[in-house]
Length: 462
Image (tube, rainbow, N blue to C red; front, side):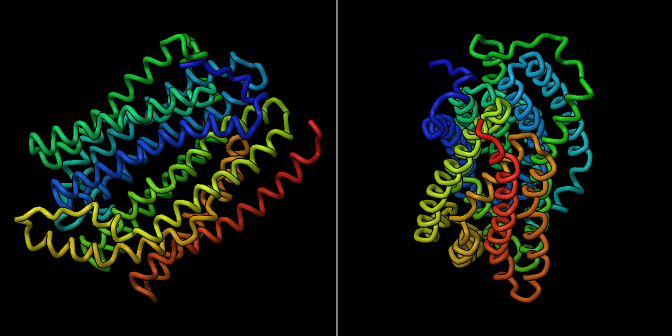
């Protein structure tokens, strides 16, 4: 695999560079998303639709702790990209060492708390009725693997900041493939049920950690740290925290959304309605993988060129990223509008001998998922501006606007909408909250992005 120099982020044509950075990111996200998707299909077909709902209850807790690593990774990687662009490699090394220390301290502490409050957290996130027992089994096992996940998520963003997207792609593929292989072995062959599904996920995290460790110990990485870099530096911690808080806040709000959605939908339609949302949630993770890939590819390009004061290239990267992401989003939108029923059917078992409860749940899911999915993804073609706009502020180190724009969709619009609209429109009120929030957030992001470009990037010819 050819090495990629960080200097190429500031010299290659933007279109070519964005494709080279985004395609591996998109492939990695695709494989990781396919892992979640296929994992849910395996669980639904081999264990049952209640099991899908149980995993949906656990995800926000485990993902929030794992997102601590991503937050520290993205916050630190923004510093690393700008430091490398400015030729300050010592700061890049010190930042990476601080990222590792901070990730370990934060995630291990959160896992301990998560295990202590297990019987409180699961019902709070909608794990009630028949969902509770399988959710507790899955949660307890997966949480032990979450620190490995956090290190992987942190390390992956650093690899990308070094300008090595292919290695980052491999790091995302390994746990996905490992999880699916273990799913087949533990669930289908050994018949371990939810225990098997949980161990398959945990083994995937550990495999990813092994590869991340290998990369940074090998000659492929430019960041060769020593023990002195692990000592926490107040200035670097403050910068990592301010920028990483954007990502962590987004995941915290996502966890709150899961909490509210699972409880609201359980009240409207019981376990079956939670299963509908679980399927749609998997599609939200999977379907937009090319858009997220462009966003991930855009971050180091914008950060490096901003650090190098090449503002024309920053403007070009914004415009090109929005165009590419909008095209991908439109293609996704068309597919989801045409095939929602077929997608829903993939997650449901048709094996003989299903219980009356499972048969009733399957029937309910097949009836309600297609229309819900069309509403949820109705505004998909415009999300590119929203995602790229928020990512730009994060890439250039402006934490406050990045935080506000990141929270705009779910925090400022979506949460109030799902608390109000279901009172008047019941189930429909939940689903129409998605496109309304997307439209409002895109309008706000577009306004602030345009204002920032005029104020910062158009005042120079560099």
